[in-house]
Image 1 (cartoon, rainbow, N blue to C red):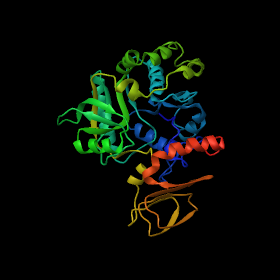
Image 2 (cartoon, rainbow, N blue to C red):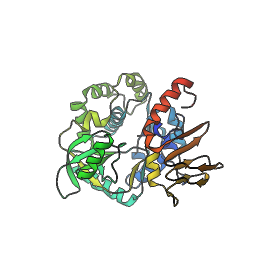
Image 3 (cartoon, rainbow, N blue to C red):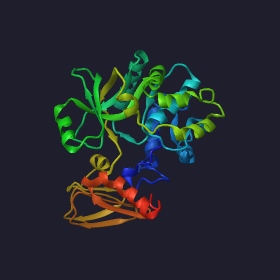
Image 4 (cartoon, rainbow, N blue to C red):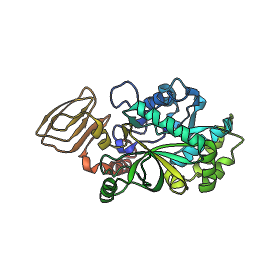
Length: 349
């Protein structure tokens, strides 16, 4: 899944080049490319589909020359993760009647790649043999309010049945989840076999399934894009979590530890980045800091930041925008972007 705009990472992540297309760490590979590289260990390139907004087609093909144009499924507008996944499922269904599927966001950071691949192999083995929906859960390391949570059944096995899903909690509830040990972070990485997810859409999200079923004859043909362009606007805007995972019975979670970070916020980037003696993070640029601590500074590579007496701030510059705000207020960045879009008619988005 590579269609998000990543507004919480503004001003680095912009409409014309969202965060999945950015190289955050100077490795020479964007988050999308790193995701693709990992999946190549599990399957050939021709088995990988990229679902994204139509405006990113050329950028995807530029960054992933190993794939063909018809492997990029183009959404005419954003309709959240359920329609995105339904699109891929229907394309796969037109190509084969049996498949085991991994659904992965393109903007996650995985630090322990070998462990990650072993976890996916275990998950693929489970969904091949069982008609259950499976998600990967991460043991929380802090009471994070930016992630969804999964409550799991008691037991000693890594593979457990899901009790409940909870969307991003407030700070007090996140603290409770963290302390009980009964909850995992929802990684947003899912596994299932083709028949199971197809049945789930038809049973639990008929509004979405009916629209895609109407185009069954068009998928994997030259008429596919025309059908998608006409149908997609009327498709419900709903996440796979709300639409299916929270409603389905017998959903399982695989308790995982592979150095996962959803690079969705400046705070998540701060947590995994090297820090100086005063817990400051400086990315790509140079900095000279006086009486300052717990800041994250991200400027263009030729820039120097000289900072005195700041604690716990985000200082980020990209193109024509400079952002300075408290790290603890980073959840407000989406609102900043919305307000700026209204005031400046999208000039800085």
